[in-house]
Length: 317
Ligand SMILES: Cc1cc2nc3c(=O)[nH]c(=O)nc-3n(C[C@H](O)[C@H](O)[C@H](O)COP(=O)(O)OP(=O)(O)OC[C@H]3O[C@@H](n4cnc5c(N)ncnc54)[C@H](O)[C@@H]3O)c2cc1C
Image 1 (cartoon, protein in one colour):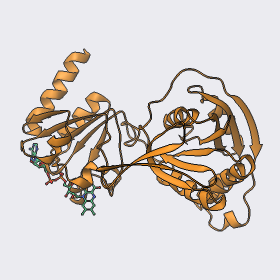
Image 2 (tube, helix red, strand yellow):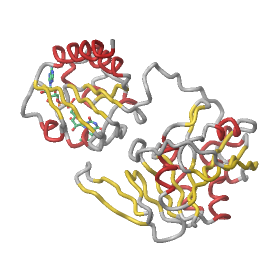
Image 3 (cartoon, helix red, strand yellow):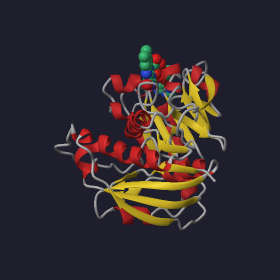
Image 4 (tube, helix red, strand yellow):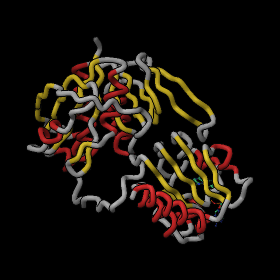
């Protein structure tokens, strides 16, 4: 049976659930080996967290060069493994880091690459949504290892317990991979809310908030959701650009997306229309966002959201 490599994602010592999604997608096409890139001494703790999904083995690659030389070192380590093992595929999360690693590995191993897939079949046919989500593309890598980056939340993770075998190697980056050095870094200060691209629920606000995100944030917190924003809101300085959803912002694909005071421009839809369920709150019944809504409330968000928050709180208690 052919091998599929998965690059594990983690942040601040916690393996992200995207890893289980990638394992699930990869196992359709072959035996999954999860590759964990880690600082020396940290790999085994990360590997021990990989206890869900149909992974066969975990390969820990330890090196202090990953912290010092960043993406170039990571890509070189993965490229070496791909060149040696010649897996059928390498699946990586579609983050900025993941896409850069994927691109570098594709060049180094003379392989084809597909980015931002929302699904991968047993035959390694990747599904992408392009042109703002209006067109679905199915494509297949025809040369080398199929290197595919997959958007978080696209594949339903198989969370059945597993106990993959673990092995460990060390890695020293070449002089070529050491041309740029990370001179300092600070850990991302996590707020109380889930990460936007990984959240199961996202509540977003647009120009309709008029800069007042309290109702949006309160509803998000009641639901345990991440908060997003349209570009109108981020360009106005009402919300951080890092939380913009859309073509020039983040792509999200949560179980539930709540769009509040957002008209539904094609560039906004491009970042959220693969959400499993979409609820809209907008005072204009003709707003285009209603075209992709599963449920819609025609009303003023400042009246609707506090009532919705009270309703959820009442059901919880
Ligand atoms: C190259 C390019 C890239 C872009 N990238 C992005 C992107 O990544 N993300 C993005 O979002 N946009 C992007 N845009 C901008 C996009 O075209 C829209 O301008 C933007 O999405 C509009 O934001 P909005 O829906 O919040 O504002 P508007 O279009 O002004 O809509 C506001 C909505 O709020 C409703 N509303 C007003 N008051 C209330 C209230 N009290 N209660 C309920 N509803 C109310 C209105 O009825 C209206 O439907 C891009 C544009 C370009 C040209």
